[in-house]
Image 1 (cartoon, helix red, strand yellow):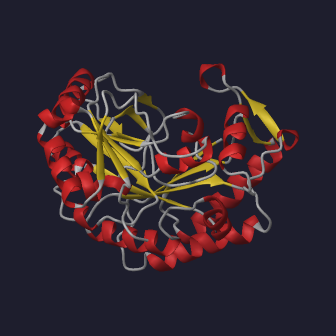
Image 2: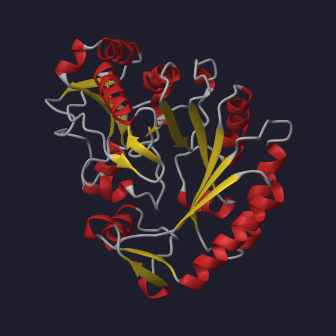
Image 3: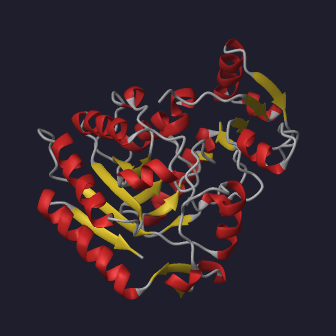
Length: 341
């Protein structure tokens, strides 16, 4: 898969007051990409398209260069203490993604150029918690690796965190464009995680992302660069022959990581879930999706902010957890495993 290149770029005028803003404008001009001005990254208008469906597709290939004005970091439990805001939005078209509803009418990709301000705020959070470690998640609202070959914001953040005493960085990706990150001075303070899944899930629900083999190749590179390595299996989805599909996943994963130091390997497991608003958006944007979202087959579970979600029934959820844990123990007996419903 080729690295992401935006078809259209919007830039906030004040973003050009920052070195990264100037650098990106010059880069996109040299690439011959159309550049437009916007007063705010939250007020982008005029994305091409004759209807909402076309505008959505075009928005996913639109990059907005802006300033992060809200510097209060969101919490990111249980993954980390805080979400560090480097970017918002993703070029992938994963049918199940929670960003479908989180971003609502703003599915375009945003990158923030005022990194010094963001790092200063991260410093404050770390000082508040000293001497405890403060973990920052960089992929709550984006797949930051997917655009970092253009911005290098993630690389700067990795090296910033590598110089701290009480900070740690973590992020997850479905993209394999990691070569520019391999020489970053991370000092073991950044956990690099890859999202993996069964062949069925990747084929049917993850268009616009790197292939499974590309992700595995990237994981080997990352491990050899001495990054702490992890994998997220999400969503775990009960498709036909799902047990065989997930067994093959871990078997292939194990073979691909032969010869790699796996002493600090982690797995995070998340079962498939959806909300009523998400279902409406997904069916509108991906009308031919095979994603099963039948409320009668699920259990309703209250979520954050009073918005409930539909998860697997207890028997199915227990079957998923028991099965996947058994597979991981067979191939990666020393790995740390966390399971989330």
